[in-house]
Image 1: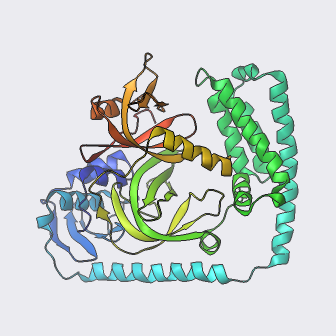
Image 2: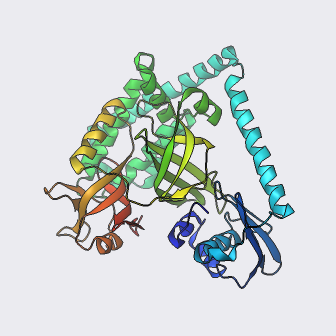
Image 3: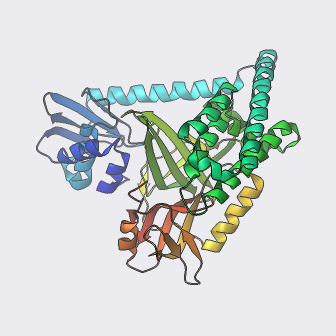
Length: 444
C-alpha cells in the first residue's frame, strides 16, 4: 500500500467514536479469513453473526461490506484497515475474488457515468428565458428581504446592543426565518449565528457590531451587484444562498491539477447532519483548497481523505474573488504518506495574507494558517490561550480545551495547522519532531 495508515488516521475517517472502537476490536487476525490485496484493493471475510465480505479500494479508501450497517465506513471496513496498518503481512498479494472484481468494475462504470453527467450538464443548452424569469422572481423576493433586514438592523443599533442580552434565541430565529422566506438562506444562517456572539466574550458587543456591519455591506453590495467584479459577484450570490451544482463549478470555476497535501480536517455534527471541512495545499500551485462535505447520520461522505497524506488530482474551485472551496474532479493516483511537516509561515505573514484576502472578499469566513515556530501558552485566566512566536507576536486560540496542544509542545516551538476566523485560531494539527498530532480542542 502506498499509504501506510496509522491508527489515528483510520480513526479520523470513522463515522463516529463507537464505530472506531468497534473497528479497532476487529483489527486482529482472529475473525478474518481469505485476506488479500492487489494493486487496487484490500479484502477479507470477517466472521461475525454471519460471514461478511469486506473490501476497500486503495485509490480513495472507499469501502463496501455485505453487513447491514448504515454507517460508512462500517466497523468491518475499519477493522480491515486497522489490521492492514498493524499487520500488513496478513494480506498476501493475490488475484481478486469475483466479488471484489465485480465491485471495482461497478465503481469504474459509475465513475465514468458521473464524469459523463458532469461534462454533459456543462454543455447542455440553457433555457435563458426560463432562467431569466426565475432569476427575476427570486431577485424581487431577496430585495424585499433585504429591505426588512436593513430595518431590523437599524432598530438594533438605534435601541442599543445591550438590549439583546435579554432576548431569547427566538429573537434571532424569527429574523432568520424571514430571510428563508425571502429565498436568502445564506443570509438566514449568518443572522442565526449572530445570537451566538451575545455574552460569549468580553468584547462580544464589538464582534456583534462587526458582523452587523458585514451584513449591511452585503445588502448594499447586492443592490449594486452588476457593478461588481466577476469574482465578487459570485461571492455575493453565494452568500445570499444561490448555489452552483458540481457541473457548473467544473464548467465555470478554476481547474487546477497538482499534488495535494491533506493538511487537516474538522468534522462537526448538528441535528444528525455531519459536516466536514478538509484543508488541502497544492505543492506546485501553493494554493489552499477547502473540501466541504455533508452526510446524514452515519452515512458516507462523498470523498474519503486521510489527514497527513498526499495525492495527485484535478480540483475545480468555486468561482470567487478568493477561490477557496473546491471539489475533486479526478484523482490521478493513490494517496501516499507525508514524511515531514508542511512548509509554514510566520504570524505576521499569515495575518498579512488574510488581510489581502479580506480586501478582495470581505465576507471570507475562515482561512488556513500553517504557523512555523510558535509556542502555545495559557494566559493569566484559564479561558485564555494563545500561540506566540519568538518576537512576542501572539494569536488567541479558540476554545479552552488545549491540554493536548500544551502537552505536545512542552514549551518548545512547533508547526501548527489551524483555521483563522479573523478573531481566533482553531488549532487542528501540530507537527513536533516530525510527527503530526491532532490537537482539536475537546470543547469544539
